[in-house]
Length: 623
Image (cartoon, rainbow, N blue to C red; front, side):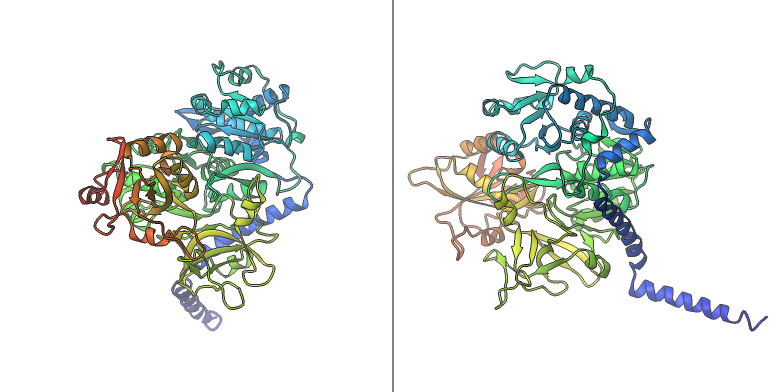
C-alpha cells in the first residue's frame, strides 16, 4: 500500500514545478488558450454560415432575442427602458411604412442622418428587415461633404432626425433635384419636399415583417456603410458586410461578457464602435445597454451608478476627460468591471485605474474597413492587442520597414518589402485572402485600390495597408506608434488632411496649405496644424479664417495652429513634405515662422506667444 502511493508526492511536486515553469516562461498561456477557444468557436459558426443557403445575421439574432426574452430591457434612453419586444415591434412599423409607400425595398441603400436615440435603432432595424443596406452619416459633417457622403453610397432615400433638419438647408435643392426621397423623424415638416415619418410610424401595424425579406445568402453581402476619413479629401463609405458585423458583435462575448451585463454606450452610433460592437454586442449576449445621446464627463459615473452599469465603451479621449473631472469620494462607487474601446494612452490608463479602480481595460485595434483585429485580452497596459503563434496561423499580418521621409514602405533590391525585427516599429500590413477579405469602399474602385499593397513578399500577393505604424514586443504584445499619410486622429475622429487643405484653399489670401497633426502634451492623438503660404499682395486674416473653418469644417477637423511659411518644402516625388513639419511641433521658441492659434473667445486666430504656448502645454488653456 505504501509503495502504491509513493508516486503521489512526486507527481504533486512535478505538477507544482510545471505550474511555476508555465507561470515563469508562459505567463499568459491559459488566458491565450481561453481567448483562442472563443475565437475558434466563433470561427466555426461563421464557417457553418458560409456552407448554408441562409446566413444567420445580427438582425436574425435580434429577432430571436425578441422571441426569447421579449420583456427584457434592450435599450435604456433618458431613463426610459425599451424592451426587445418594443424595439422589434417599432422597427416592424418602420418597415411597413417604407414598404407601403414604395420608398424602400430589398437591395436598396438608405442613408440615415440621426443622433443617438432609440429611433436610430428602430429605423436601422426596420430597413434591415426589408433587406436594405443602411448608410450611417456622420452628424458632424455638412455642406459639400455631407452631399458627397450621401451620393457615394448610391442611396435614393435619406432619413433625418428631427434635431438635424437644419443641416439640410444648403443641400436640400441638390437632393430634390436628384429625386431623392427625404423623410424627417417628425410628425410635421416645415421644409418643402420633406416627408414626415413619425406620424406614419405611429399609425403603422406592428405585425412581423416576413422573414424572406431579410434573407441573406452570403456573409459578403453589404449590411451597412460607415464613413471613414478619405485621403482624396472627402469621407469614404466603407463597406460593412454581414461577416464584419457578425464578428464585431462577438467583441463583448469574447472578453467574457454575459447576458446579465449592462453596457453603457456614450459613443455616436454612426461609428462602428457603438453600432457594431455596442448594439451588436448587446444583442449577441442578450444583454441591456444604456444609450446616451451625447457623452458627458460630468454625468458619466452618475449614470453608471443609476443604471448599475457593468461594461462601458470608450475611446482614449473619453477616459482622459473622465480623469480630468474633479475628484470625488464616489469615484470608486460603481459596478463597472470592464471597459472596451481603443486609443487609451498608457499614462491615462494608469490614472484611470488609480481613480476609478481596477476596471479591466479591454483595448481593441481595428478599422471599420480593415480585415484585421487585435484584442488585448490580457490587459497589458499600453498594448492595443496581443498575438501568438496560433493567432498568426489564422491572421497573416506583418510589420514592414517604412521610410517616413519618402512616405512609402522600404523595399529591397528585389522590390519586396522588408519585415522589421521584434521591438522595431513598422507599417502594419494584413494579407488579403479568402479568410481575411478586404471589401473596400462604395462608389470607387480607385479608393479601394489605394488601400492595397501588391508584390509585398512575392509577385502577385496582396496586403491591406492599415496606414498605422506599430511595434510587436518579444512577448507578442502589439503597440500603436503613429499614423502615416494623409490622416491623423483628434477628438476621437479621423481627420482627412486633404479635405481640410481644400477648404483652406478657398480663402482668397491663402495660396497654398499643407495640413498635418502635431502632438500636444496631455492630449490623445494630434491637433490639426496648417502650414500656409500667403498670396502675394494679401495679408493673413485670423477672423476671416476662423469663421471660414467654423462654417465649413466639423469641430474636430478645424486647424488649431497656423504656421506662415515663405515656401513649401516638397519630397523627391513632389509631394508636400509633412514629416519635418510634424517633427518641429508648434513651439514659438523652436519655430521662427509666425504662428497663430485658434481662439474661441476672440473668434479669431491669434498670435501664438510663448505665454499662450505654456498655458496650452500645461493644460491651463483648453483646445
